[in-house]
Length: 90
Image 1 (cartoon, rainbow, N blue to C red):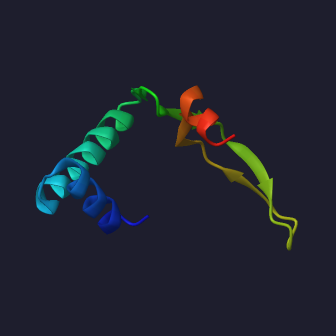
Image 2 (cartoon, rainbow, N blue to C red):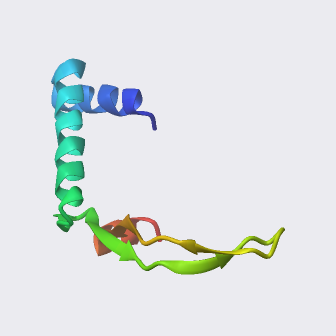
């Protein structure tokens, strides 16, 4: 489902204009991004939890040249689905 399709679907279900739905979705994503940027955990009931995790630095090897190099640490976003959501896909 594309963003355009999601906006149209929500617009029909909520009786809102597509512009209003698009603005609400944009604000929601912006809020998620800003909270994740400060390492906050975001839990949406019956959907799941978003959280940031720091991945440690590690040494990797280029398979073609066998040259070793250091991969720097990085922060990634993880999503853990709620049990209700998991059950829907069994």
